[in-house]
Image (tube, rainbow, N blue to C red; front, side, top):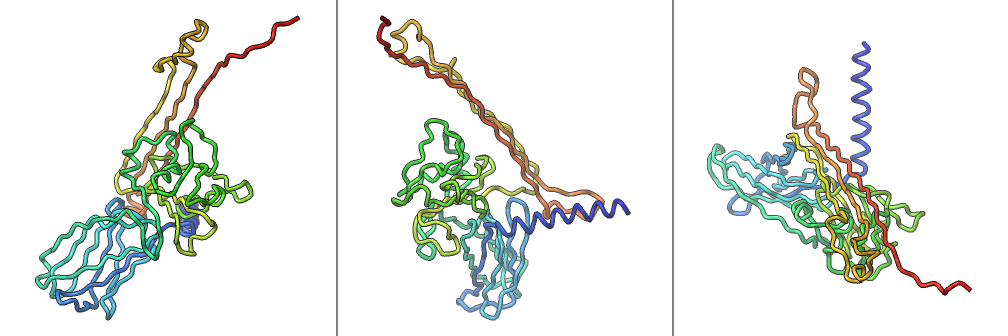
Length: 333
């Protein structure tokens, strides 16, 4: 009996977490139309959408007009498969689904046996122009390839034209808005969200409540103008950080980025003075780890690696810096 109660409490906690995540989610809707070679609608076709990272699968059936709609789809690469009697199986891979941006994935089936498969590789667009929205999406590959000073994902907003400010040269880890001016708006008018949840303190002049570990960021959306009313809460721009989810395979990494004065050259002006003929003290260490994978317990209710996932990361930053200066004082009398 105690074991049953323990599992009941365990499930209850996870359900509450799931509801909370859903309320703050940046999931989106995937829809499209399924047609035959002549362009006519194909009703009752089976549509399957599979997340390529974790194997999560969602299914739908086309209506009389050949249309389908699958809600609450997380961002990432997806494979669309369509099956209908009298047609070859259609499979479209690498369909990019962006957070909170409705995606349209349509398919034209070829006449033939269902045992045959037509494979298509999709291409993703990084520029968001739907409904007049102007913005840019910085994807995971760009995030991992770019050398971002300070490793704060919010500063990726600088890649979008019309965004000014956000000095990262001083390794400033204060939880501010980054000092961005988007299309001339004040920095306090910029909204920052993490997975759809508002990430600023409105009573502290727009200060951010935290930062996201860069290795755990899937993409960053920068919306500058014309975005829909559902975003709200800002009269300037929007910086939307979307974090990664767990996958069906275990992954992990550890890292450290550092600066040290023993590797620095001294300045010409400091070398002129024998008392400062050395590089100033400058020690900086930024280190952390991340791990993700499936949650499954053999011989229990959860034996499928494609149902429940986890991701966890931590990062620390520490440093010491001393800048000696020279000053002149009048001689004492």
